[in-house]
Length: 118
Image (tube, rainbow, N blue to C red; front, side, top):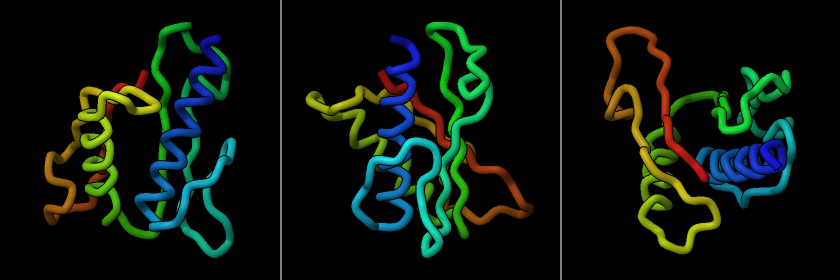
């Protein structure tokens, strides 16, 4: 059950990332999202692909794209979904580092968007 739930959450996030980052209609894909014409990749990492997770542990997902301009849109889409009562996946606790993902950085930084999805 835990593995099926993680797979469903990953598919949901991967579709959302692809939709926000590329503006294209999301498609069902298991591991990677994107093709030769797209520069968007979404992958699981950490304990899930190794199958060493706890039943109620987290799911680590990373996304790579040519630029990071879509991250603020992803955060806003997750926040909008958190406000919906009838959403397919229940989203809560959306935050990012840095808080404003569009603010210019003085150095190369890793930008993070975190949330809880049930």
